[in-house]
Length: 145
Image (cartoon, rainbow, N blue to C red):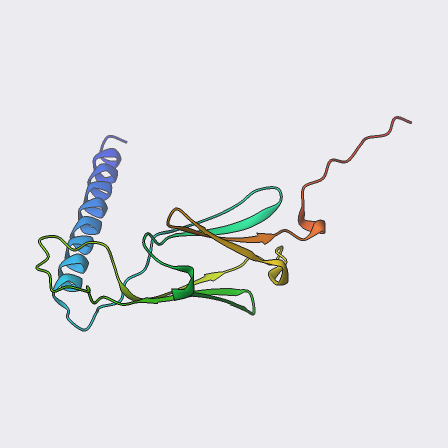
């Protein structure tokens, strides 16, 4: 048994090291690949008793520059914003993304796609899909006999 444990620890350390190397190489290639100009805003997706929600971080974006579409349980969020500053500038740091993006999310079968709503507040786009009535949690009473 004592020979098994060091092998497990070694495998775990090797896997973690390999993941770090893969991430570093991916980031390095993405940094120098001029053709790869695409970006994707950060997103959260969650559900509660009443609905399913998708939220995206889009600080500085106007709702008119964002489009939403639902087709066959796929939510597509697309946006385009100009990268041109009004005055010529020399950036020292440029991390706020501009340009185009597309994100797609597979929706669960328990949502009502045709009753979706969306809000854009404080740089957060939130898309709400209510749950179908039959998918909502309900309490069942036990009768005494």
